[in-house]
Image (tube, rainbow, N blue to C red):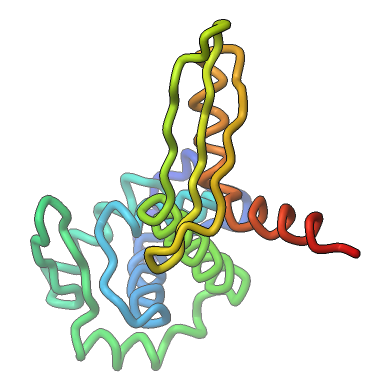
Length: 185
């Protein structure tokens, strides 16, 4: 059996064996069928703490060295794609990973990728309010069309970052809830 990975920061049921972590990284790339950056893969596997951050990085480095992952530099990001050989191998052995872990990883990937898309397509503007505090304006866009613009008052500077983070994490639900509330007859 391969040496156990670091288990710090891993939720119960998470992966602790390097072999399983490598397989999960490959499975994720195969399932999403798109390149992912090293940062995205780490964020995905930390969304629901599936594997230790350092072990994930070691797994990716080992997979690049062995030719299972192809690493390319795109701007400042290192992008990973699955080699043809690895795609074939993963298809044969992916079921050895627990189904719950496979589903959790893919679900986390869609959460992370959606959050990134929302951050790219949405804008947040913070302006000091005349009476103190801040006006925070959120704009939700889709394909170049502004769908919603909302300004709220926030009393404290430290609340601004919390409000911004929560907006990016829940922009789709927020937009949907407002539309549902306004269109009920």
